View (cartoon, helix red, strand yellow):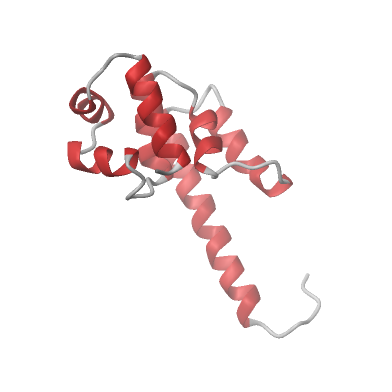
Length: 119
């Protein structure tokens, strides 16, 4: 079982709510949540934020357990987004997805370009 799946299951059991209840509160399907808990599916940042909100835990903690946040400096952006008290959950999800898309695109571009100085 994945670490994030075990973590979510533990939080759910400690909160004494059923899998079905958590799925409903997080607005995801019951089978999908079951697969996440068993380590068969890797949830997106958006789904993790929804689960965190439903379990009333911090989104950054959920991201950290899922490996989306690390101790590297480049992860500071995601931590800043997740920890911003002014943004709504939906805004945090949107910004996180946009940032991750830009990082993926830039990584692909840098891998396809020959070594040269970049401004």
